[in-house]
Image (cartoon, rainbow, N blue to C red; front, side, top):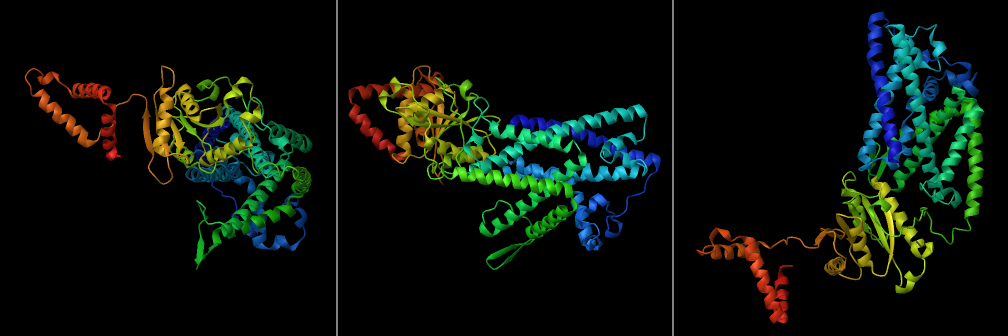
Length: 570
């Protein structure tokens, strides 16, 4: 998905160059030619509908009602809202924090729609002569390019550039539509409306290739059956967009009365006692509903195709849902589909993670606060996130090849489904890993060592304290063969500060009173003439450690008792 986002960004950058040239060249053309005549104001008296634009409302009183006429005109101009439906389609690709970035994307899309569609259309009406404009009714920007002030060769070159940009935009739109349709169908399949065959991942790429292939076939069929007629395609697009907007707005309106945990609410809300009336959202929904109904009666071709396509999908979904009823009692709802790729050993190349990654251990999908916190605070530009679970096996299981069910049971599938949902909510990519092992501590430490992880993160254990958990993982690190990769262990508990432990040899974090004691001993010893400035604090620590080692050899029980009393600091 990152590759598609990068290409879309490049297309938008090239398109911005074209728009910028137009926004500079058009005012210069108006100044040079002196064409200051503005188009008529968008009032009801100035609205003139062609026969094709009137549809089934031709000859009815509805066209005589000013408000109805404005709504119908707005429905015909709905293509200017192109791009807003993409926000829902590419929601999974939006980086963290999602809500903040979604607002930025929506504002940029709105400004872009006003600048590209609004201003450029206004300039086209002002610059292209009335008797010439009908020739470019399906290629308004191309006509605008050829009517700008300047040499003909320059205008022709810019016209070619406009055509290239148009091709890039259409290519990006096709890619975005595939991503959006694939996401919608995946959610439909998760709700058991489609049979699991549609969600089977590709063995190499891990994509839902059956859905993608079906979407591409339908796109090609649409082009062939419409014969590339821009009017038919535009009407069908507008029909789908406005009904999609209306249904989504209607769904959000219902959710406003059922939930109260929204991160963002449409402005203009009136609170009456315990109840909140979403006036802004309600007016938006009513307006979209009115436009959708207007389009239903004015766009005859789009309505016929749209209703037929809706009925076909309804029949397919209904039949598929009936087939899935048999599975409803045995398989958990909403499970993701995963490809199980077997690897003889774990390393950074097989898991696709960079050295310094963050390894997160999960086992209970009801207790994944530690994963949520890692997703929130980890910068993916610096560290990759690898989520790992240990599949416990018996000692003798290694004598035979393990089957897929032994490595990845329904529980692991449900566990990783929750992991994917958390990652998608935060807009971050994670690598998934399941490791069969007889000792979970050895598996965790060995995996972190092989991946050259910078940090191993776990949640609290239900069977032991966090201190004991850290000790067991530390002992597992000591059992690793040399050379051992040092990394830190972070144990995250809900509503408590994290516990950090450095695995392997590392400078200790001394208590302030111990630092003062060390400094006092150094002052006394360095005052002796034969030591002086040659004595350093590290020499004092080294001497103390060797004396402690000698005392342990003579009386380990006494030293252990002293260490027990020293634990009062913890």
